[in-house]
Image 1 (spheres, rainbow, N blue to C red):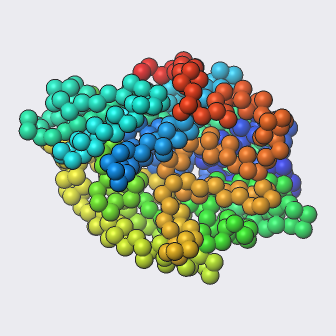
Image 2: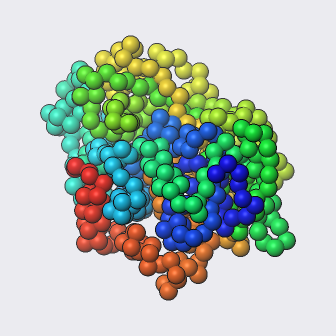
Image 3: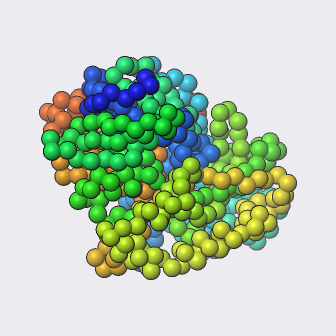
Length: 497
């Protein structure tokens, strides 16, 4: 379809995992709804959903230490870890349903088993990891997590990290075989291919949404530019979802909804050291996360990851933070300055003033040479050689800045869904854990925008529970259901833990 129609039931902005997920869920619930999806680039999944722009960790809180903070009394808080683990299980259930129904195929194209490890250095962090393991294994969500500070065991788990270690080194790790590596770019393309098989869903690439305005009848008028033919037209929709990554912020602002006021964005780019050396890959078949350095943002936790992209294995180390004023990798250097306005300038200034150490950290990271980055890698791999590793630029992330009564503005490191009071427009802002919890996030959009259809007795609820058997139930409190959905996902997604 070359030209959009003048009117749709739903318009989804952005060709990434969020729009693909929402479009697929809605299409299962109401196949006759007329849906248009607009992507500004020449193909879908080219920004944050692309495999090389995304860490690919199926975020399930098995290895990410920032999800399990230590409280003042020395105990470990695992509530956030349980929440993230539950959310990823929701994603796995939905993908398993799609495989089971033949709507997508070949799960190994987008998900593969890959153990998740937390690996720490020094007596203080070894003690923390031991207590974290004790706390987490009280929950059946983390059953099977192994802990070791024994060098022989660690050598078996991660020979590459253990090379040339002193017997006196204080080291420890936890290992969770349930972990996965996910290629969200491949998954996004599968979802879009499925959607495009139906005439009620139209996907327009090279089409950029420039403005969103509320009409007197409660519908939204969307100005869309055809970037290929340099033609602009207007499209009306009853419901709009903005899943445009970093560009969600200016588009949300253009809607002039009250709920968008005070939001700002802080763009952060990432870089990875990458190797495809088979001798190194053979010695590291896991994702290994450690503690963040002082003043580092949560998304900059160092990790050495096995990645499986289009059937090829690679190791990634990083991420190293970068800074650009672009909101997307293929964006404009004017994105950040043009996003500043009277509604958010206090939030932006407040967040900057209260995060000066983060600013210093980013300046230091941007100024790093390759040899300095290799020095960080050698904390993990003692004998890392420069010729084995190349620097690769990852995707662009925009961290959410929101109003804060005390500080003026506050920097948020999670994902946030913004919805207007009428439930006719929704936007996803933020980054990690992002793609991994995309199904949970899109169900949240539906709950907030279509509450009458999503509550008990609503017309969608039976289908939702067919797709996601744990919907409405806390897996953290239901061991039998957890085992049931994990066994189903393991079989359908061909996982081999």
